[in-house]
Image 1 (cartoon, rainbow, N blue to C red):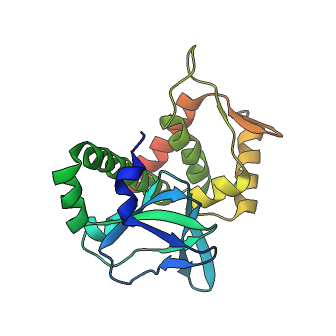
Image 2 (tube, helix red, strand yellow):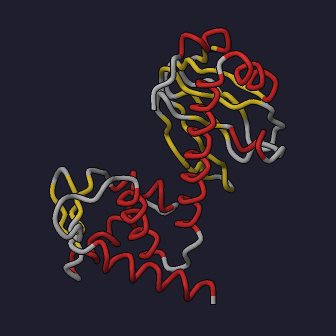
Image 3 (cartoon, one colour):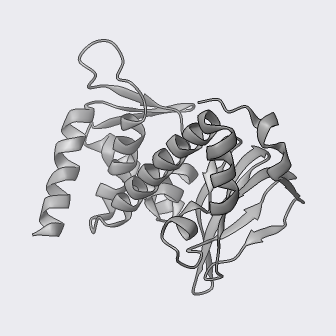
Length: 215
């Protein structure tokens, strides 16, 4: 979804590489739309830094603080020099009056972001850790149209570290979990991709774990 960013230039702000954009628990009344650079979303749990997401240009972050009127739930750090649009309730109302089409596109981005956040949270609610790894593949499969054919075999171009970030688990555990999928002939691992042999079967197994956890 493209947005005419020139019309929003007056809301732009720059952050230097390594600059903390906001901190967990602080009050927040703004959200951000990245124009250039990458932003890391992370939490500190005990003495461990946990990366929740790495966001790219065109993505939104910080929206939950204004939607729920709650403190920030995570930290945001500029991984590169970042240019972002800073939006709040007041200037969003200005957009609604002056540029309703742009405001509508931003609303659609917000809705998608909220869905993505809740979908990722569903992964973390699974008690079975192998099922968390499997659910990462399901989440990614949901975001892309199924290929021609029966749609059961799906190909994913991602790294173990990316799986670990989404599953909230150490990379070594995720590597072993994927290897267990290979041993059970549920997946094949290649240098540049991971192939899930039957995505529908994987969905049934993950859903069974989810139902068991809810029982």
